[in-house]
Length: 99
Image 1 (cartoon, rainbow, N blue to C red):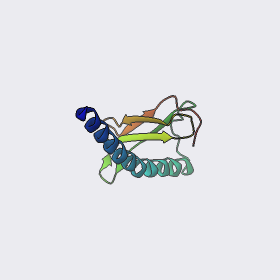
Image 2 (cartoon, rainbow, N blue to C red):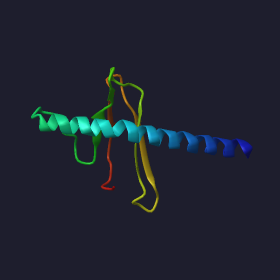
Image 3 (cartoon, helix red, strand yellow):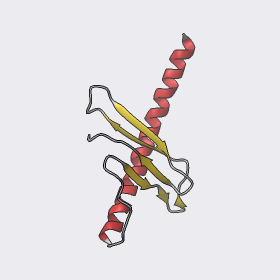
């Protein structure tokens, strides 16, 4: 029984840290996409219900970053987690309309 509680505590701690990191990482990505859009450059438009982007730093694309989408708009909270690929790109598929 102790193992289950320890695993749940570790998972909760990991998710909390990952959510904080995702909020830090996703915000600049959105701003970068808006800047590209304003500059008149063509960009990929993801299908409805998909969130896509690229995580970058001053060193370039960042691989292995957790990107997390979370909402409490539904009866059961929903969290989707993906990890960026080699080029820093990510895709959160089949997202319902929510805040």
